[in-house]
Length: 349
Image (cartoon, rainbow, N blue to C red):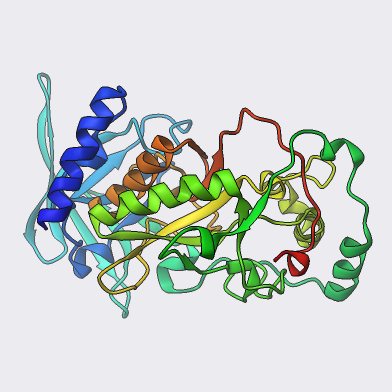
């Protein structure tokens, strides 16, 4: 705890000097009680949507006033006062209004909240894949092997080779204590099958050195980095695009555009606990197509938001630019143009 407090004080001072937000510099929040965590999420009905989140061991209702606020970052916040198990009171107070409304949750046999009743209105829970340990999966193409062969034989557009070329290094050797959970080298990904056959991660040496500095700073908070994906050959990006169903291809850049991971300067990362070696349960799963993937999503637990924001602030201090739509994705000094690469992973040392 002393180490975490010192780390928070140091980070707070640095952020103030650099005029950056300091919300992640606070003392680490406590884990959300399990009975509350099973109620958290998005609820919908009557043309409305709201989010139930946790803060300080209590529930809050976030009611968005515009559909454009898809992150619920500008929502009205209503604390829920607990009356008894799954029964709460919502207090709407203001200069012209002061009313109390009853809030009641219903759960399924596994304990997950499935409906929320507010006054006379009933709202249903919008479940995302990981909520019930059913992660997002795409239907596997019947011609998978043919797609792999075609991608391997395809020629990368010459225009993508323009720019500086990264000097790729083995991240596990460059960043002491980093953990690898290479999702696309296994089956725990949106395809349900490996799309690469090498259990190693590579990055440009400058990006890897910056990642090593992040790793050292995270240690002051009791965390280490987990790599979900780093350098990806262009042919693998083409395979992923070709394997996506037609109605979802807009989720990926087209092969002729290239992908930032092809440059060796992009990385997908998460956190693990140094004390146990176990991965942190972050605010969303990797490649989860839900509102939780947004970097500024206001829901989840206080601890999840703290961990996500801590990761972003430490990464930004070392030259990484975070994605607005995928909290786990970072580009190192993206203003410098680097060439896309199609070097097979198996040929890298």
